[in-house]
Length: 479
Ligand code: B12
Ligand code: SF4
Image (tube, rainbow, N blue to C red; front, side):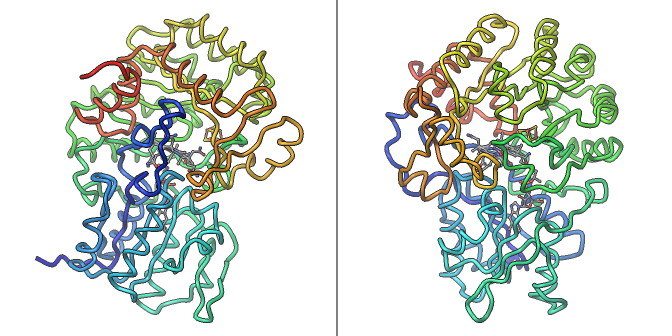
């Protein structure tokens, strides 16, 4: 049966193009270990927005089977006039490009639109990599996509009137409009229509709490890509939570999706009250210096069970270099305070980065911190640094190279994706960074807590995902 849709939105598969043998690079960098299985929240938000204007829209999630098989048949059956492909991270960039070419092979007249946190900052470079893209949206996608639909289908308006896009012109050039695009306040966004997402109930349920960020960590893409920080009014958040309960029920743990829960502390506590009233459990993430660190016990009584803290480093110089904080001592004091008083029912995962400029002393500070608090936090992610386009780190990398001896690792895997692992400093090689990170992560993580923190936090919460996670943290074990 044909189900026509004007717009088809595609979440690409992950890491199936040109994957080298990465077995020598430490457990965390095996391609299959890096795959995540999550709802593409950006696509769902755009789909819900378009749907609210009566535009018929479908989502196809190719990451569920990691192949392109259904893309051609979906286009043939739903006959979309616009295909929007998302690229949420560098790990799906080549697959994003392939989705565009498959689309044009099936139907050259379809208008292709790209967007997402990796391709947005790449800008014009994406057009060098493909001739199959018509329009690129550089920041948030709801309003631009609606304008594009109006221009392309209803011939109502011109592409040059949409800010924050790059579009191919009929003469073969590129039209670039001023950055960024206008955005919708989260409280005024139509409610997410979760059921637009294929088999949404197989993923961890989430409700978006905030978007953008007030901080400017150098390694992060968000400050440059997303518009200013915007929180969702608590009453609106809770109404959306009730909608999600209608699909997922009250059993699963709900993820509060946000770059920084507690950026609005009063709102954060009202949301927590709402969880308590509904007797739900939930997980979220906040900064190490969040005021909520002092309120962990209160949040646990309100159902918080899993907390990720973006600590990044325990060394003051590295924290300053990252632009994480202006006051490393207060920052570290805050997280110490939380760990010292951590409630028993709360699983805490610390997330750390092996950064540029690391020396024996900075790493030894991290190890001292991790040893001192071992048993108080439950799991750790220790990530080798990857430099992403659009981050301040990427823009200033040549200066950092001169000062700190870091350098980009050029391999086809990274070059083709325009993101780079690096040699972190004059003291450590990339292999040392990768192996150190992988080992420290395994040594300092409680296995069950590590798996819980990965599978409950946006990942698909099923046996297959858990089994994959167990193989990462415990490669010697079969399950
Ligand atoms: C939540 C989150 C996760 C979750 C879920 C990710 C997901 N796919 O939804 C988890 C924990 C699983 C995760 C994993 C990873 N993440 Co992550 N994650 C985030 C975070 C914090 C929020 C993303 C989000 O959902 N935002 C809210 C939604 C509504 O926004 P959005 O997805 O950006 O969508 C909007 C626009 O991008 C655009 N858009 C998106 N798609 C499309 C498509 C079209 C056609 C159009 C027009 C527009 C458009 O419009 C959307 C609506 O406005 C961001 C940082 C941040 N604060 O934003 C990092 C971020 C996206 N993650 C990042 C990375 C690197 C990863 C990992 C690779 C980490 C790892 N080493 O494993 C994996 C890869 C995951 C993947 N699927 O590709 C990087 C990406 C940088 C890059 N260039 O690659 C970010 C930017 C953080 C950073 N380091 O700066 N992540
Ligand atoms: S790392 Fe977190 S706190 Fe820092 S800029 Fe990015 S989203 Fe904001």
